[in-house]
Length: 206
Image 1 (cartoon, rainbow, N blue to C red):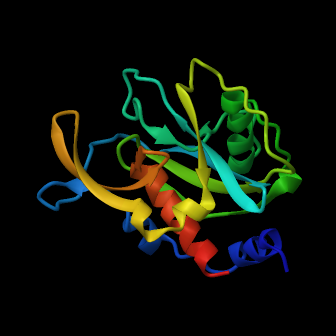
Image 2: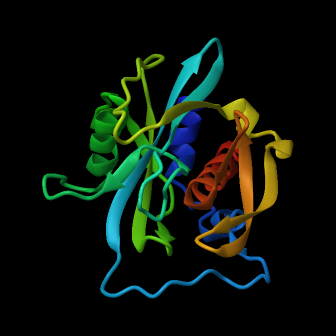
């Protein structure tokens, strides 16, 4: 059985869930959980891990967001965004946003499963991570308004224990202790790191 089939099969089984996610959860420097006051139900969104194979190894794109007046300014994320009225479900949201942000066309039949939904406390979002397999190395045409830089992540590199690190960072005047992945000399932390940690936990189990 090839990697794609094994991964698709594993994604249908019980997932590591919040245990794997919380390993990479940022906290205040004193160890307390980060909290925000939000009103109303959380917004819904989807993000995509879009895998492709090149010379026997697997890769997927990440994107660095521009600096803006928002909670995730300048952070590195998976392609994705908010559920829109035209989306039938959060899988469609993830695929549409991947097309809009990175110019990637992926169809529903290329989706092999999903990970555990993640609540992002900072932005009051429930996010569904979607796993898709591209047929070939993609030609990326990023939207410059939404993407400052595209980072190609190597799954082999991500699986190496030394890529998991921790650092203190300051966000909006608060000192935060943030576990992160060192990917291409970039600090990948927060919700993206939590999602990726569940993903590699699944990969290690196949």
